[in-house]
Image 1: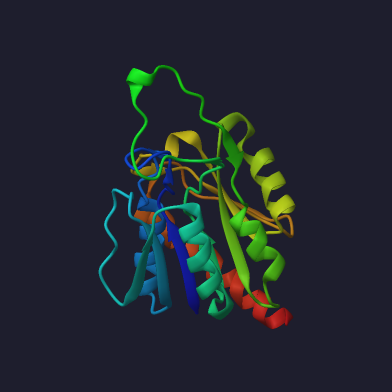
Image 2: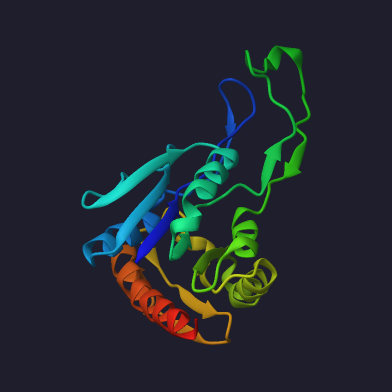
Length: 218
């Protein structure tokens, strides 16, 4: 399969020095990319410059992004030729309305207000564009008490084929306790506290099955 994987946080500029970002390490997406490559799939990894995890070695292609707009551009370029998109990147929910391009905010000038606008929903846009047989899998990082409910709602609202629900504690952790939910109502729960490399293998077992069933349905 041609598998497109995104990993790591976006960085939205506030001024020439500062950015709005999040604590995603990119480890989950990189683990999936490594596992998929080792299985012989053709892997294209879109990895944030801000990720603290290095791109895996092996037979795969890696490109880097900074902002949501950068990632959007790369997704537009590569999605059409993709069989499966695994959207593990932590894309910003908000983007500063404006930024100081040629300098930086000075605290000596006193308090300042930062106005944030909602970021475009990249994966929902791609879901509206997908062709028959393509699979889109999202990730939902949510409080554990509402994790499945929120993830299911996101999957339906965005038009995804499946979503990985994982608790907030996953952020910056080497472990994950994830659940895979699919649009046809199926649910698979991985063993608790798997390391991300093992979870990647577990996830790809299901991804390959989903893709096979989707191709047969076409």
